Image 1 (cartoon, rainbow, N blue to C red):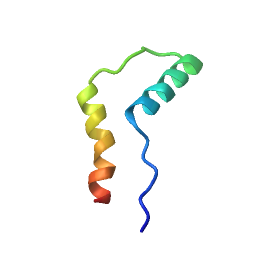
Image 2 (cartoon, rainbow, N blue to C red):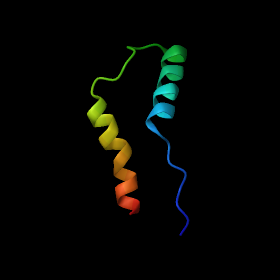
Image 3 (cartoon, helix red, strand yellow):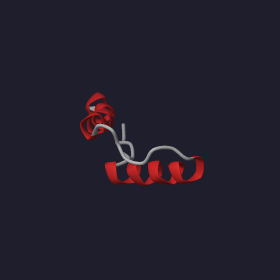
Image 4 (cartoon, rainbow, N blue to C red):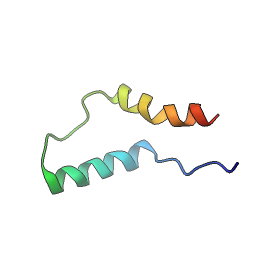
Length: 47
């Protein structure tokens, strides 16, 4: 099986900013550690 294309933290944060600009809401990330954990989970599951 070929490895998927993983979205990195920078891209996720840029997408988050774009969505907030379009729809409104509070800027920023409440817990960066939780974001990192959520992004690492698919990589660990794939391995």
